[in-house]
Image 1 (tube, rainbow, N blue to C red):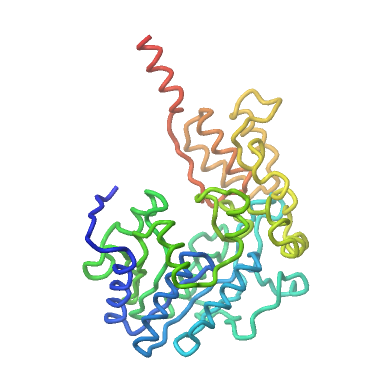
Image 2: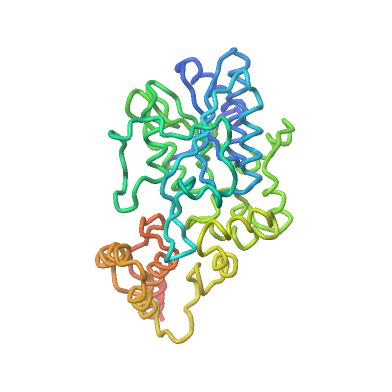
Length: 372
């Protein structure tokens, strides 16, 4: 992990200086927003600077359709906060989204043509509803999945030249995120960014903020925020659990457990829109089911359970992906438990990477057997 150097400066002052620097360096600036606390904070700081300089910046939202109503309210709030300084990029186009709650309906296509009657909501009247890039030259990261979430972002960014894309990613959330946001200079000698083609770069002005810094700023500035955070806090969730994101992918499906309580109308619409939602609602936090933390009855080991899940996997094409991946792994119960989790969550994209190593508990036991 990179060594942290502390300065005699608070994170808010540092973030304002970084954003001011980006306005000096780039004529074109676009902030990615998700409706969450971090992107709300970043968007507001950038809009303040744009307002001070009498400039326009873009606010970009890739709409996954299957999100909280509170998220959409937050996006509308941000898009209209400084209308004279805002260029709206609300993207509502079809793309492939992994559905972790169903093995039979493994993908959802948000805004799928012909299914407008069961869309979660109508499209925004001023949104971008067709791809703003040339379909013939569009790139796809994973052809087995098809045109996905990150493909939409990649192709959108390539529509611009010499543009600063601002993202509210905080390195303090995890060592992996810290490494991602301060890995190498991506623009001149700036460490808190990632370089891209066409002279573009992604910047993380809030990379050194922590959870409490964000909430203090929102409180001090009297900003509106997603009410889902209030529900989650009242529910007693930890700071690691309090987050707003999509409702069906492999890292956020647990939100389905509380969705009927938080937003019952959203849950009702989601039941009609996507397969497997009831399973996510019933078993999203169950240790034996989707979390794969406790071995179910009638199985001697995680390896036995993994073999059963593979044998009964309903999609032959996706099954082959798992078979090829697992053939490169160690055959022990530590790895097998993680493989079970991928199978249960339909994670053929490998978004929850498996730690392919000997069982650390066995290594510890071996050490103590030697000592004792």
